[in-house]
Image (tube, rainbow, N blue to C red; front, side, top):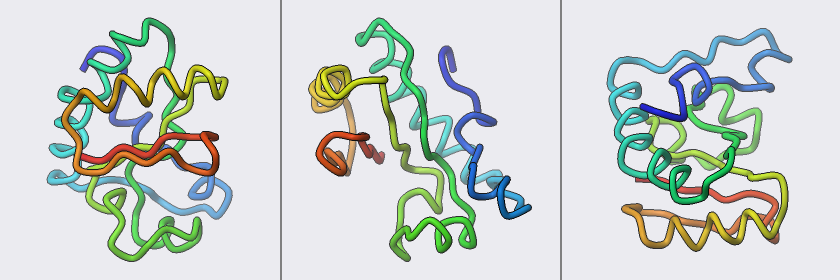
Length: 118
């Protein structure tokens, strides 16, 4: 893992605000590591600039509070929501992600963020 950490992928503003723990179990950590190694690090390398994880792993309670779907890939450590700082940057990153492994790739909310799952 070159550009991302498990701590970064499990940080949640909602969890902090509500005093909740958002700690992935060992299986979720393995899946997050796989996501980083196969998708996020290669995408960041090709993008050539910082990529911010706005949401990664979510505990069931955090997922419920943020309005996530009940079968969200975030619950198992298989998904991340990403931003670059601009919609143009997000578009470039999205185009890069289309060429990398994924089972879900979504241009969310008019390009405000990108959801990718492995």
